[in-house]
Amino acid sequence: MDACEADLERTRKELHSQEHLKYKLGTELDNLDVLAEDYDDEYEAVQLKIDEVYDRIEILEERIRKLKK
Image (cartoon, helix red, strand yellow):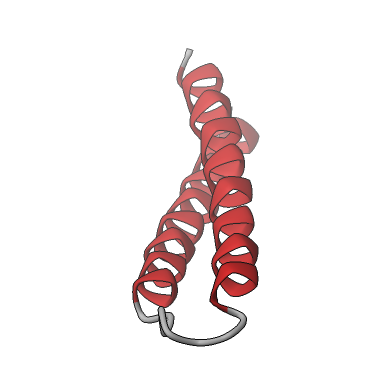
């Protein structure tokens, strides 16, 4: 049971880390210069990173649900 609890704690820490990264990327997205020549490319790159973070968050939340059972 201790290994399961340790895994749950690690997973929660990783989830917290991903939530923080999501916030940072959202701030980065908000701070892009809309008048910049490469705005569309930068926006797309940051949005792709955000999408990846959301995918990881979903996986981690599912792992937490399974570990709680």
